[in-house]
Length: 41
Image 1: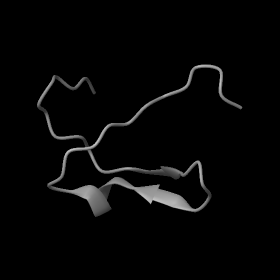
Image 2: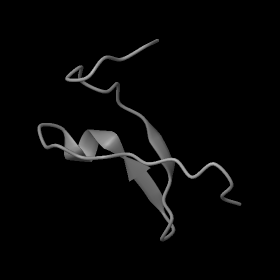
Image 3: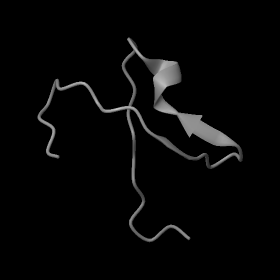
Image 4: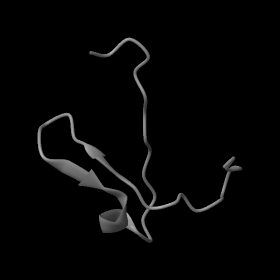
């Protein structure tokens, strides 16, 4: 699936940096930025 600028992101969950889980559905309707760190461990 390829997204274009302005497309809504599909809902997903992931491990949060600070512990716990991140759930994108909790941010629905708000703007947010997801970053990936290439060499993170």
